[in-house]
Length: 186
Ligand code: GRF
Image 1 (cartoon, rainbow, N blue to C red):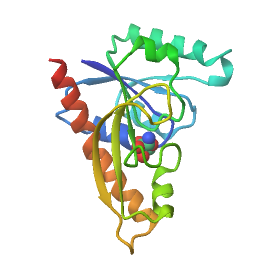
Image 2: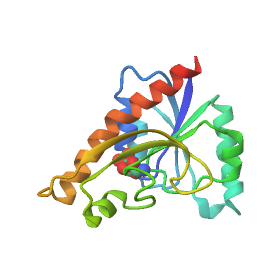
Image 3: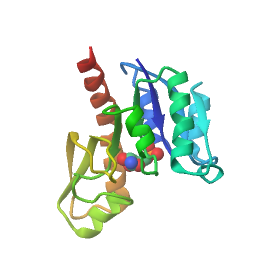
């Protein structure tokens, strides 16, 4: 099973997927919208092909998503996993990959959608937060939930400690959920 990962930043989740020996798919393409994102070097170091695009050089979201879709099809990609992709997925991709686009988000959705979710939870003073893996729809972090894992916030913990803990959980959870999804496919 061939899959693509979409990412805009550091790529620690991308790296965690690459390092999962039991991953039930091949990551054949990294799609990235930022030419200087550290995730690009991680893809190159792992021999993964990249499609790096500048959204501003296209006339519309539909135009760049059309090109992404063409490239996904050309690479026989059947699933798309978002890992820190900082753009809202549009109708072009959602139509082409209906039910096959999955995201990981660092909170217990529907709590704290959007950017800086770990910080949002920390500053809200809640006693627990977590990680959600969900299907992607038109909204921001709104699609049907697949799996969640809770992370308790120690009253003495710093934001940095919480971020580290959340990322550790993400790096375990995402490969696990991906394997479950692909198994169900048969
Ligand atoms: C992760 O926290 C993920 O949940 C969120 O963006 C972050 C990406 O981190 N959607 P990285 O680039 O994988 O290190």
